Amino acid sequence: MMAAYLASEPSVINLGEFAAVYFTSYHAEREYKSVPTIYVAKIVETLQAAAANLAQQIAEEQGAKYFVESTPWNLRIISTLCSHYPKAHFILMLRHYRGAIQSMERSSAVIYRWAGPDDATRAQTWASLYTLALDLPHDRTVAVSYDRLCTDPRSALHDLKQRLALHGLPNDHLLADALMVSHATSCPRPVLCSLSDEGEIEFHGRASYDASSWTAQREIETAVVCARVWERLVALYGYCQPVNAQ
Image (cartoon, rainbow, N blue to C red; front, side, top):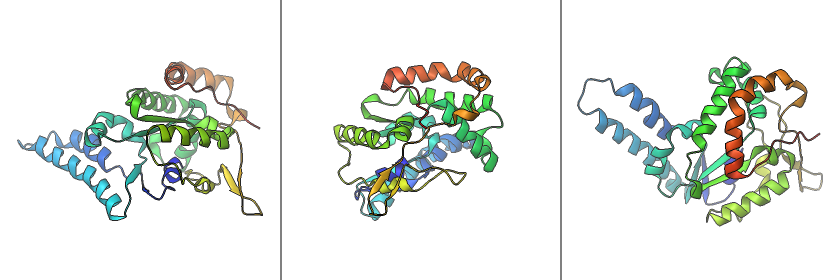
């Protein structure tokens, strides 16, 4: 969703979950290291460079100055991304563990095994990835509160534009109608805005998680894993707990 919004700028192309740099930097490096050749390091390095260059090549071919790539697992290769893209900025979506775990629950029911079979596994996934997020270069990271985006989208987008401008990133022609489409794995899901009968954008505040299915027991089981990580994220980026808007 955020990638689609950022790519509504004419100078930006959305590569989606491109995953090429992640695949060559994380999986290929781990799988290929046992191959009996003295050229392992050279081959992996070449693959990584090719993947990084391909993203830039696609952007240039389509006349875009910037590209946005939204593979969640990129958090595992922050140092590699910083090396290949020394001028890159990171847009970090901060989503409280309650809503994220519920989202993973829906994803697991559809097809995605990585989402985990239970809350304990999903909490570990959330905590491990967001712990890695703490290592993002702070001077090149723009954080977006998913929970605020849900409950007060107009204000959240205004704040995002201001912070993009502070980082010298394009923001003058962002189109809110990019947020009228759901990218959730299980549909239908609520969207943040729609067109009125007069053709105007109307924003829709909504709950950032389903409080009715979030029991005290679920909170206890997941908070023991996630709460400390969330506290560190709040301290670093200044965001509050999610608001369960009705």
